[in-house]
Length: 425
Image (cartoon, rainbow, N blue to C red):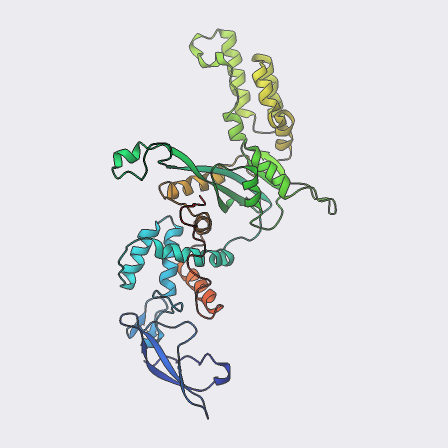
């Protein structure tokens, strides 16, 4: 079968005669070249904007049609891998695969070897294409309700141990102390109370997270949320007040703070005498039963929360409990939160905790030190959790991104590399 020949990339030569003109490269990665023969002008050779790798004559298993040898898969200019192979590697690391394994799989599929089987190949692809993939398939604004949490990653270090270089023996490596390396801030979002919160965004910051780090995270997307759910971490609420303050022109209020009721109940200061149930007197046992029943119902509505506080003050009054109530003005804030609760809205940050646990399971053993590339990888991981990681659509996005830049990659490789000896994470 003779497939349709491409048009010359020069607009003035539209409709000119085009014929095959040999190949560029070596098997199995040859690319078809063409002759353009415009009327009244000298012929010239060209390759399409996105060159096609010469394929075997046969049938395409994806589109289920016959294809000619010059209709093989498209390739980003200056790349030796097809756009689809790049997309497959990006989808693989988005699902939690390591750079090294994804690079080995890409080289195996494309029949390309390498002197060093490391992950730098796929790391470069993440650096160049994760941004366009996020712009095409990820959210660009915050929803009406945010659910926030964070998790800190540590790594072993030789600082202060007497070692001048990394020890070779694994037993010595396991004895090295750990230090906080970076923290991942996770955010889930809910646009409609009838649907559960979805993974929305993730952001890596060096060391332990602060309010300034949450400010930076919230500034990555547009929009203005109405409510923010978090645990007892005050940095989240302070950052939200700073990013979205009271708008004196429109009268829009800052996002309403919603405290996670699961963490609230976890931190409830139980009286010391409740720990030894076997030695309680009948009266004390009745008091404990009232306390347990009130605590179990405290998250139902505002009246249940008020009744819970009254029961605690009646059966186990203490300065510790009053101090617990004063933190974040819990006595009135939680009652107001329950009074204004809409059915379907989250009462805890469990939705984002699921995202954070999944990110931790995929990243806990990875020695990340470059912040910019880690944040680009986190965007791919979030896209996977949003069920937006598909090879076909990502390959099309990569082809469109390359075509918009003259057929080449969207930028130089290694632009986000850290200076030697200075890690950003």
